[in-house]
Image (cartoon, rainbow, N blue to C red):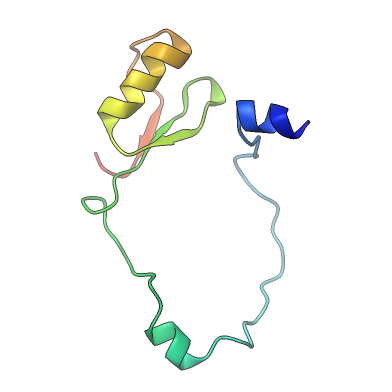
Amino acid sequence: MAVQAQVNGPNLPSVLPSAPALQDVTTTPQQMESSLARVTNPSETPLFICALDKCNRLFPSRERLMAHRKTAHDTEDDSDIVTWND
């Protein structure tokens, strides 16, 4: 079954069930200041999602997404693309 998941990718619902938030009691203020995470914007972090036939694969550019669609979906349809870059 694990091989099947690797071939087809994970199958996640579009909306995950809610859960109570838990307070982080282990992270120190020093760790927060030295973390590698930061706020980004669309020009720094391109993200294109193939929403065709519930595919939901992520791509760093529209060109890569369209190449994926041509090979994986046998189409050049440019609809059903989710992005924050356009």
